[in-house]
Length: 328
Image (cartoon, rainbow, N blue to C red; front, side, top):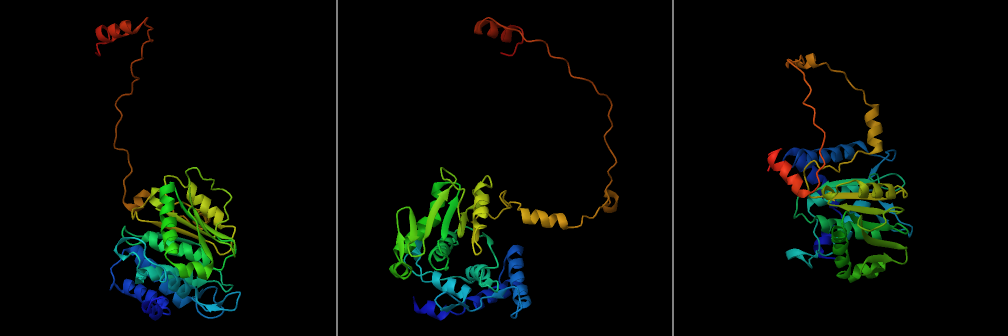
């Protein structure tokens, strides 16, 4: 753990809040979706306070061994002890940018009074070149070894094997280059999976190509590059698989910033939509003239086609096409 990380170990939530305030004020330029996410976080921080609140932000919790920790700070400090594995920063400790701290503290910082996470699904869009896979890989390692979940099943999922192995491969390299992490959490790194024998936890890459995705009991499912998914098969499997645990997390991340097809409708949102009142608005209320402007002059059937003709051979067919139909 570098000196820089020690200095930051207790200010991740503060850094994230400062980032949200700067986005909302316009000091940091961001799209409207980021602005709304930041405003929601600030509103929630103001709204949910006190012991009677249904949600708590980054409270001090106690694990089964009696050790205290704060969920948001604990995750961020964990990630900053891992190394970059690609590019010019390879080998250097990860240093979280304020926007990354905002994502992590928002998703992991909010908990219910019983200590389980408030948010069970996260959807993240970032442009290419912003260490998307690095962030996902680090979160996956945390969920494998440090989230205090017995028998945690952690998966990197995608439509193809190669895509599914990107997050897993980066996490695998991080673990191999972090002997302290492996010793601290008794993590074994294999060619195709990672596991923690003491807790019965595992981390694997799965894809829709040749993998049996049904029947999974998922603690953390990372769906990578959502925009590349032509169907909702993988998403549905992960969403269903996470429902068997009370502190699981569906982590969806993509680099495609357009309104892509797999922004799937979910049953809870369908039920919410059904409860909303629909206002009836007439076209004339909107100044729209819907009178028909097309006048039908005549309607007639197309000429009937003649019966087909059988020919004896290819030569006869060519002769008819050339001399009768005159199409060749």
